[in-house]
Length: 314
Image 1 (cartoon, rainbow, N blue to C red):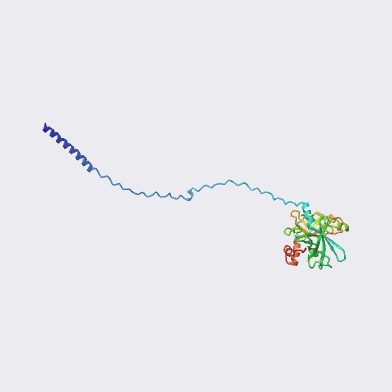
Image 2: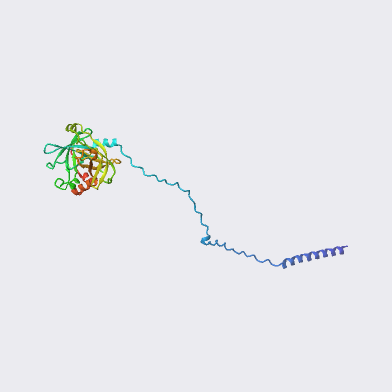
């Protein structure tokens, strides 16, 4: 019994030993696992540039069209009301009463052209025997005395020149008004624009050809009328169909109806033998010629000359 038990124990131990040996041999004979190497992968290259013709360009952003700009016709200039021009003329267009050496009087018109009281008129109203005249100046409707005026400028050789056409183109004078007022209403001369044939202008003057001496002295009114230019040569303007084509209108004004500026100084009519006044031509000296005459005598432009004159002493 004991021998049998001992034999079984030895057999069991041998079996166990034999199993462990196989397991151990299997473990040692198992092929070695290869060593794992970690390879650092380079970063992926940047995408290659595409040819220019394959580059996707941004799409053009289209703007909404702007509203079309309407081109409007030019606004026609606006006529100044005749009543406004007349009201100004009552203050700035004046009447001359000049006593001559033979005790007669010369009646004429003039225009105040500076707030200090300088007046432009004609040279032919100056008596050549009295080259330092003083004239009574009247204004308004009817004309009332506002002071006196003394001559300060006229072309030096006006009375000595024998060519009538040339003399006519020199027929201006400038006077200094005295009185009790220092801020006179005045006309601005338009030196920038040139009158053209068929232009319509307005006239202001004190015509007196058809009036008696009593009316001239007590009840002389400023007249206002229209004139259509018939001829112009740069220095002289001829116009037709105007009541101003009378004696007494010398030194009167042609007025631009859109700007209210002075465009000419009246100096003559075509002929007083033409009894129908509306058939006469009225002649005026253009601003360019006025400026040229002042330049010839003073070597100053008209505005420069006027600004250099002393202020009147009241």
